[in-house]
Figure (tube, rainbow, N blue to C red):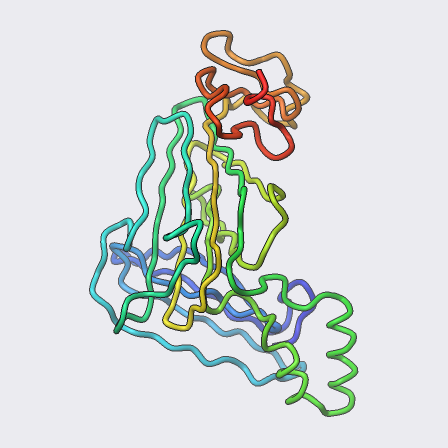
Length: 282
């Protein structure tokens, strides 16, 4: 499968299939980026894998393994449901120690978290720590140039070995849905990040997080995510609607201009997002 940044020629798509015949899109993959491990959720009857190819270029394709396991709860092996709360913290199993793979004799382990804000609010997710094995970026521009040169010299086998370590999230993956009600594919996250450089805002009242490991998992520190219910002030950047926080029990963050619950001030948790400590300073 050959592509640069987008999948225009050959690709693999994955869908979760439900009893009523409906399906949910999980993602499209090509080049050296492999899908992360997937556990079908409760009420699903299967996972559909679709391969599209054309007559231009060829590659070695893919090999996948599937295993039937006993059904789990909607939360998987861990996880939880958060509804109508001002804020919370979600961490990988064993954090701050390394997470592990599934128990002996099991092929995978999954944790599912569901967050629902009150009407008129959205959910801010700030990744304070994130270190999960894998490399979701795939090939950068330099890698592409090296790959093309190898193609010309018929060194495909060596080239595949060269990129083996950077081909997606094959052993562990965090999936994030910022709009679970839509048909949009989730974000697939792995690798490492600088402190407080990742943050996401839900598009509606809900967000969903899923963390899946396999029996191939090596282990890493994992993640710590601070989620905060923020006032939904409409479209546009927060700075464009400054001074519009509801006056009762609300605090406006100095830099991000997010409106959060007054009681979150000075609670030893940074709820204003990356680069903004104002809720802990006043």
